[in-house]
Length: 263
Image (tube, rainbow, N blue to C red; front, side, top):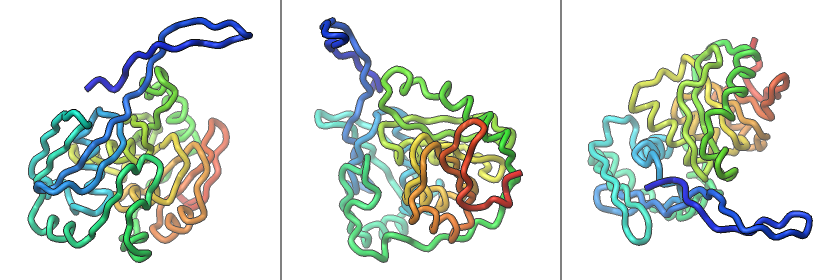
């Protein structure tokens, strides 16, 4: 499905109405189905859905490693998109115990979680860090806008990108949901065995609790966000040993955790 569509609009400027065309980003219900059982419906951009499915499965702890995802098929229905996955039996048994109903998570990271214990699962402390220079962050930020063609066309899309230690962006994914963009990046990177130790992730959104959690669970050691973090996210970054940079701009960044890893 094409992630972009055209719409007839009317531009109002200085009291003058002008009919014209605009480009809109597609936002589609995407049902993630595990071993024949529907688990969640995400509102997402219908592009790179296999990467989204793998990244979501990993960053949510549904599977522990990419090899536990045996097969993925994507279907289009009248209501939206269906991503049908076959996962390892041990992963599916654990999934059935979670009893979560998280519909519409474009803007909500905790919708449907049953209890407070599920908010913060156990996270292995990140025990490796590379040294990242402010120049590398600035270089990545300068490239970041150029790596967002859907945002350039529509102005309504988030992005997540992977940059190497020198600040050269190697991967970038977009979606209407900031969580979805990060999951797409995680899914693609894990499938292609990208070494998280060799760089850092840049996101176009705030560093919310879930963005930090997904990063930490996936083994990402450094997260750079263009907007602010929340206190909960900072606390989680400290607990996980994740380097967290917020309000990232050329010539100015704020480091909330891991200053020793920035040079």
